[in-house]
Image 1: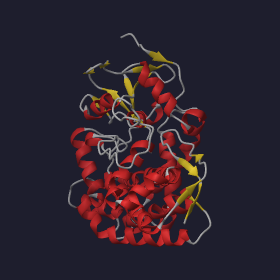
Image 2 (image 1 turned 45 degrees about the vertical axis):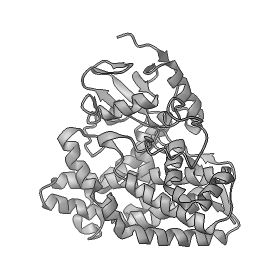
Image 3 (image 1 turned 90 degrees about the horizontal axis):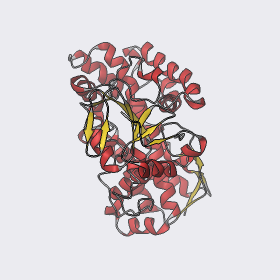
Image 4 (image 1 turned 120 degrees about the vertical axis):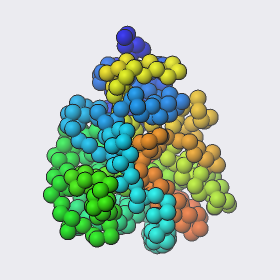
Length: 388
């Protein structure tokens, strides 16, 4: 098949990772599917096409790898992200159980209490780091304990999560630098004993699923790593986007203070405009044809979540942050059977923090952020903020 239209662009240059939106728009304008000559794969960037592709899980497979490089795609690793069909349903059921809304009711009061305490504490400070002091707080202080790893594991979860997303990109400098940390995390998980885990933690729950025969012991061990990325980096970056956008546009924060029922809508809008996960790839197991998309069997395609969420064909004024937009159909968490298992948990954390801010904070101020250098994540490493 003729590989056109084709673009010779680097989605993962320092410039494109710091501000990916001009590159996303270039791909969207080039066509419904665009051959990326640097990576020998197609890109899908328009909202409707992205949703359709994410839904087509029997034709566009995740089980043959979701990364931008052959090393990871050919590694034979299996988890809830890199799996299809019945195997995926089995693994996902084990991972998602403690993160479903009913299960999270038990931790909601604690999350809201900690959110209130955090906002109260930051109100007493002249300034704080919007990422390290605010956005990381709940995942590091609550979620890492819910997973139930020993101290050493909890302390390194952030590094392993960041490494896993860098390794999912191309084997550029960031991707290569991530491999040792990723291997360290995988080895740590492989060597964990059941007795090392907190008895009532989420990781221990995987072994309980193995006791019931839902999964086997080896699968339980590997799935421990599934709790690391969904519960940390993606939520942290989404929270950072939310705080920064509210500080940039005081009128939007005033809307929430005047109408607290907008909190869930504001969280959805923060995730839409920020899209912490940039993309994953899939492999066409069969000829995939849907609308204007035509992907030959055997070709790989990168599905750009961040581009879809900024598509003007779907969202008017897509680059504008509007808390009353309520884009419940955003694809920041993906879509279909591979929708992020940690979505409910992330929403809970962000909503509790925003609820606390709406009740206690009159004004949010932020300074220009430093981008978070990542292949497959989008967000900020740091920015100064203040509450008053």
